[in-house]
Image (tube, rainbow, N blue to C red):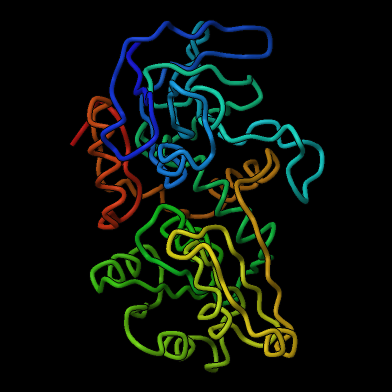
Length: 328
C-alpha cells in the first residue's frame, strides 16, 4: 500500500509517500481501507517531534473507509483505550498516529472497538473530518463545559475544525454563539454556520467587545479556548462562567491574576479528545438535531501531504483539510 512516511522530524517536507506492507488483521483488530483522511493540528505536532513518535512513522489520527473482509463503511475513532473512568483517560490511552501507524495511508490497522458505522448522509470527506474534532468538541462543550440549551458560548477562533464544529453543535441546541477571528471573512462564514456575530481578536479590547454580544453584556456562560488566550477568555466570561481549554496553538503558557479569578467564581476546565461514550453522545446529537456536517475546506491527494500541512499551518483554511483521491 501507499503511505505517507516521515523518517525525521521537521517541516512539511519530511512527509513523503512510500510503499509499505499492507497491515494484517489480528484478533480484536480490523484493517480499514481508507477512502479519506483528515488533517489535525495534532498531526503537525507529531510531525515536529513533540510526541516522540517512533521513526520511521506514518502520522494521522482521522479517517473513514471500508473494513477489509466485511465491506462495512466506518469511521475510525482516534481515541484508543480510554478506559472505564469517564472523568479522564486511563494509563493505556493514546491517540492513533502517535506511537503506532496512523491514517496517512491507503489502509490502517485499528482496534475493532474503535470503528463505528459511517453516519448516513455524510460524504467520505465529511466522514473523515468528523471523528477527532467531533469527539473533542463534544466532550469540551457538553461533558466538560456542561453547555445547556439557551446558554451563551464564545468560541476563540472561527476557522479551525474545532471552532466550526463548536459553532454547529452549540447552535443546533439553541445556544447563542459568538466567535473571534482576525478575518472578517471567517466571521461571516461562521454566521452561516449559526454564530450570531464575531469580533476581531487582533483589535485592542476584544474581550470587552465580545461581551457586548453576550446576554445583558454580562459575559458568556462558556468560553471555548483552543489557542491559549486565558486572560482574554476570562475577561469575556460572566461571573461564575466556565473556561474550557483544549489547545495552545497561539500560546503554550498563560499567566492569571489569582484574586480576580476566585472572586469571579470561574471554572477552569481542561480537556482533550474523549471516550466512546462521548462519541456516542455526538452521534446521538447529530441524529436528533439539525447539525451541519463538518466543513471541508480543501482536499489534497496523498502524495501532497506536505503541501496539505503547509496549507493547514498557513491559518487560511475555514474548516478541515482532507487527504483523498477526490482531491480539489
